[in-house]
Image (cartoon, rainbow, N blue to C red; front, side, top):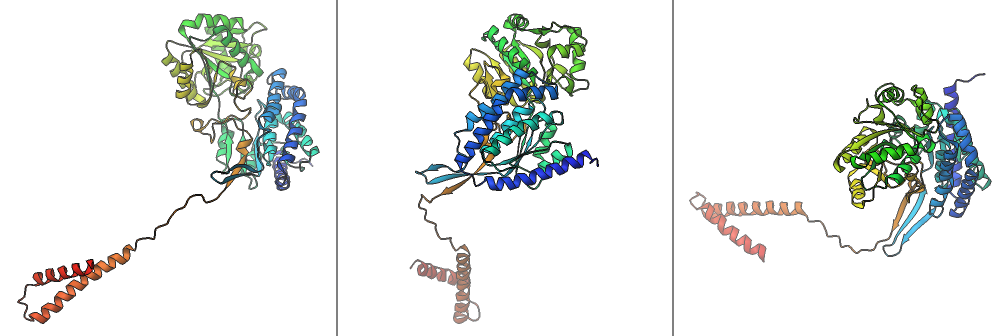
Length: 509
C-alpha cells in the first residue's frame, strides 16, 4: 500500500521523538566520563568520513565544492569537538567556595534540529555532537533537497555513539521530511528546545512555536576595504572567502565597499584573483537571473559556480573565473546585487569617506543582514574599533576570510555552524551557538549574609489609636460642659484646649 507522503513523514517524526525521549531519560544518568567518550568516538567517526560526506552532499544538492565541504565537515566534527571536549556539562560544573554557590548542569531534553541545504552534513554533525555533549537527545528534520547526505551524516555519528555506549534512539531523523512534519516537530509536546538553521520563514516558525528556540537570521555581509588595508593580501582573502564552497556559508561577504583612493588598485587585484567585472549590459542580464522578482533570490544560483551563473545569463566568461562583480550605487530589495546572494556574485560600492562607507554598510545590513556579520580590512585599529562599536552585527572579522572566520576556522571565535544574530536580528543570542547553550544551570546557594528583618509597623493600630484619642477629647469636653454649665454658657473651645494640653502631658509621660 502506498502511504501519503505527508502522513508517512508525520508518523516517522512522532516515532523518532518517542524513541528520543525514552533514550534521553536513560542518557541523563550517564557520567561526564561516559558522555565525553561517546562524543569523542562520534566526532572521530564523522571526521574520518569528511570527504565521503562532502562528495555525497555535492552530488545530492548540486551545490558547492567537494574539497570545501570537506573542510566544513572537519570544522563541524574535529574543531567543534576540540572546542567542547573539556567543558563540564554533567552534574556539578563549578563551585564558588567563597560565596558558597554551586552550579549544576541539567539538559533540556529532546531537541528539534533543523538543517539547511547549503551546509547539510557539517551542520548535522555539529548539532548531533553538541546534543550528545549535553545529554540531550536530538531529532533532525533535513532539508528535502539534502535528505540522503544529512541522514548519512547522522547515521555515522549515531552508530559511533551507540558503539561507545549511548542509548539507541538518542539521535533521530525524518528520512521523508515535509513542511508539515517539520512544523509539527517544532510544536511537539515532547520537544524541549529548537535549534534552527535555515531560511527566515523557518526561523520565524521556530520562534513562534511556543518552545525555547535558537534560530539564526540572514547574513547580507558587507566587506569594507579601508584605505590603509594591504590591498593585494585583502583582495586575495576576499576572493578566496567568496568562492569558498561557492558562497554557501551565511557569513560569506556579499558586497565590497572600497575607499575611492584605493579603488583602482583593488579593481586590478580583483582581476588578478579570478574576478570577472561585468559591464553595464552584462550586469542588467545577470540581475534578472539573481532575482526574477523583487527581493526574491533565485534558488537556482545558490552554491553554483561563477561560470555556470554567468552562462545562465547568457554571458561568456573565462573558465577560471571565480567571482562575478558588478559596480553598484543603489541598495534595496529591488536592487538584485545588493541582496544576499549565497553564490560567488559580488556588488562593488565606492565610498568617498569613512562615514559614507559606514552608511553603505549600514544600509546593506538593514536590507537583510542585521545582527549577523561584517568584514573589514584595515591596518588602522581605531577604524576597526569604530566599526565594531557602531555596526549592528554580532561578529566582525578583521583582516581574514569572513566565511570561515565567522565559524571559527581562521579566528578565535567558537567553532559553530549556527551563528546567532542577537537582538539586532531578532534572535535570543548573539553567540556562535555551542554546547553551553544546550544546558540549563541550577544553583545551590548557602546563606552568607546576616540580615535582621524589622517587624512591620502597625500603621492600622496607630490610626485607630489616633481616632480613639480624638474621640476621647471630644467625649471629655462634652462631659465637662454638661457638668459645668448645662445651659451652654461656657466657652467649649477653651475647655477643649485645656483638655488637649492635659492629654499631651499624659502621652509624653
